[in-house]
Figure 1 (tube, helix red, strand yellow):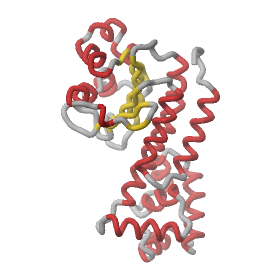
Figure 2 (tube, one colour; figure 1 turned 180 degrees about the vertical axis):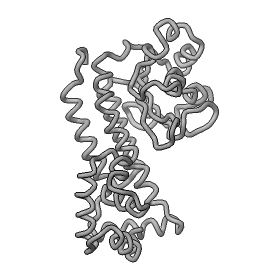
Figure 3 (cartoon, rainbow, N blue to C red; figure 1 turned 45 degrees about the horizontal axis):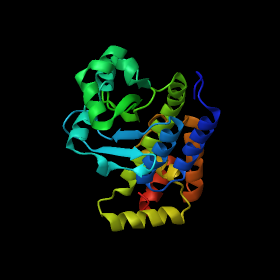
Figure 4 (cartoon, one colour; figure 1 turned 90 degrees about the vertical axis):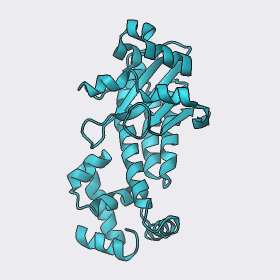
Length: 266
């Protein structure tokens, strides 16, 4: 990726990722799928994900390398440095657009070379450049996302940024899908009840995407609200609703939710 346009092969793989995510029944696998693709397309060495809001001193940090999950490689020092979200968090909190940026562009070339936090990142992780990929969340003002690190090599290129801009809505949709699927699988009855719920959904032939739409439907959300949550169009939501009506043998939203509860899917 040396030009200003994203690699079309990488973009094609990004589409494949989106399709694969919709058929993945295990939400814990979705981020592994996403980071495998991001690390390869961006030629990065480390991918960092913090599910909670970026803030120092707390929160679960996850790390991936091209070889796979590597959370065990993080010591207390590395965790503290990563949790600061430098230099991206202050930039986005200040109200700048939630768009992908590099650390060099965000901090400024001089600060990235000489500022103490930048030095700490180099010492702790070997980072020579970072690409920040912020993800929007319903909570106003909350900053979430992932960071792609390059270690000991050239900085990210304009083509990498072009790819990241195309990847951002896809990754946001993957995150939303994973979150709602995880919430659906978390039942008051514990793992055994969750297994029964999954078996009953499978018996009806429900896809993971239909399950997430159904779960949001049970919250009395409109098609537009569901579309916004999942990063899809209202038209796509209506298509999923039609599939749900057919599979449950119903004709409207309320009847579908009631039937889903009767059958143990909700």
